[in-house]
Image (cartoon, rainbow over all chains, first blue to last red; front, side):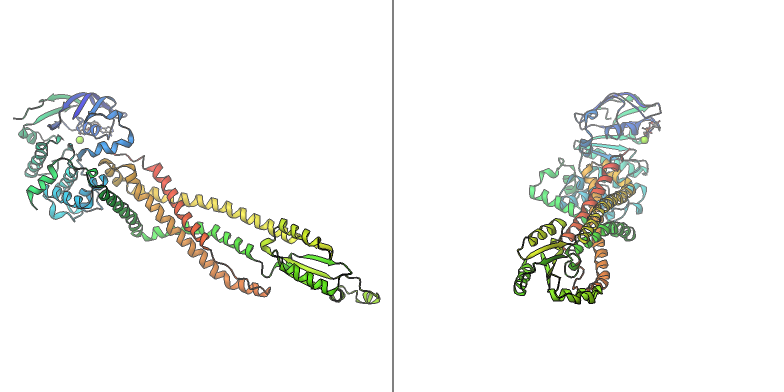
Length: 225
Length: 329
Ligand SMILES: Nc1ncnc2c1ncn2[C@@H]1O[C@H](COP(=O)(O)OP(=O)(O)O)[C@@H](O)[C@H]1O
Ligand SMILES: [Mg+2]
């Protein structure tokens, strides 16, 4: 599902944010990406979502070499990836419902199907009561859950999350992780960047560790405790 | 909500809209377009002052060439009371009888190119000459009236292009009873030169103002794109195509163009109403029943359609230039 081969990413005027990173994640796998702040976790996720391009090396997602995806095909690649952002990235002039419905509208789902799916996704993150609310009236944790509902509403085959529990209390964090595991349980590949080592180690999943842009640790596939 | 039903819905194989029936997909597509179409109007309505200002700029820019075009149309249709200014004088042979002259007059009046014709008998000509020239005494001394009878022909302005008038002159000159045919072309030529200049001016002005409209709409849409930068980024992040992102801005351009066209029409209409009174009065002084014609259906269509096209062009330009620059990070 995800294959990195000697991937280096250099932002203009800086040292390499990632250097010579190679790893492979099989479809249906779940892994955590960890490392200190500035280690390159977000950069790695951005390469997968085509938000950045590798300076060198090859990124293959779902059998597609991302370097060969033409500009106009990028939206279709992104539709197969549910992304949960650290800063939520919600539309603040639209209701919770409309935010979660957006990926479905973009893909052209019929109206009735949209209502059912959005409510199911909101129910999953326990926000069904707030569907008419605007994001500003929600707490940081609630906004994060809206972002999660938006990422899962189309059930994409790949789910990426960048520090999804950064704003959540331990109890909620555990719930969100359980949610990811549930999706992983039905075949969704899940990659979660987090520096919350406590939480990650409790999950007992594969762990990729970055340090200054280098992959310094990989507990390997099937490392579940 | 039923937990299990939810899970089944969310966790089963990924559903794609392509799986639904064609009719459903078509209905969804139409619904989305209608939503964005009226949504972009609603967005404009939420900032009525700035929307109206933009529409007013477009309206004024469209009203100017339209108004001038209308003026030209009116000028060209003007034939009721001014044709006396361009006249062909037919001096008849001396041996033409009154009866023949009357018959000729009737024949000339029937010509489609002719707006009117007047017969001046030899006696009438003499009387007028005596009155105007002050040679009354000298003429009275002659035993015979030296003046020929004259038919004064006024070409209709619709057929009054210099070439058409020249042709008319040739036909009249060929009439057997006509000794000499004389045309005062200067007035017509001047009028036509002026109309050609005005026409050219309208075209150039129209072109410049059309460019202005495109730039105004383009700039307005550019600002709208900048204001909605975050939204564009997010939509790109979750897989929105360029076409999807473009759509609301193109529809905004459509609305700006249409609103501008309507305002332009109102301005032209107001100008016609304001000018109609004085012009009717002026025409009355010339014994003409001329009254100002408002814009016809073709002009209205051109104004509204042109406004819409220019609005679309402006937004297309802005969207093409600025959407690409906004990429998520
Ligand atoms: N857009 C950017 N331009 C320049 N440098 C960047 C950019 N994004 C990240 N970096 C740098 O790349 C390195 C890795 O950053 P990041 O991937 O955000 O790390 P992490 O998510 O692990 O905290 C950091 O040194 C950061 O300063
Ligand atoms: Mg980060």
